[in-house]
Length: 269
Image (cartoon, rainbow, N blue to C red; front, side, top):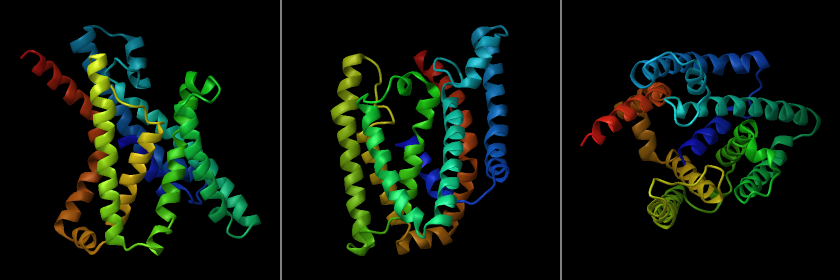
């Protein structure tokens, strides 16, 4: 659920913004690309010195592109999120145009788009789409826009709060999240990994992963409305969470270097 929830948060925060093309991307691409270029360069140098023992241009390109089997295996995410930002910008322009013509256009358009996004994820999972959706990285990355739309819908939809108290909703979605995730681990990850003799997990564009992601997203949403959450937010713990969050992107970009070296060390034993 990690990547889907990140994209859902991006949709929740960015869909509906009325920025120009330059403003929209200037705010985001500089924050994404500069740290990415730095850590991709570090990963490339590491690969040259410790793995390839020579300068390998093809390997450098593969790392920057986020190819599996390289030190840049996690960098696919950067290119995906850039494509998602382009998709979000286009949706914002559609909403801007629609709202100028029809009152409350976004309130009607987003729920339909969210439903279509959920259906799309199901169609992708069961390979009901044309081959280009599975053969093209661009189309795969673009598919994550569906999670951005769903995130925006969920953060603005207030249907459940009208019928059930927030505290009960936190309990309901906490329990549901646990059940869905434990079921995923026990019914898929463990038996499939044993069968294949290596760690196996479902792809992100999967109904089961969508259900887990939506459940956890709503759990956190409703937790944020509680008095306990508001007290934590105003306390020193809230400040610590904000401080950590400022470094989370850099941690993501560098964490594989740490894990890779830990793995090399542990394998000796």
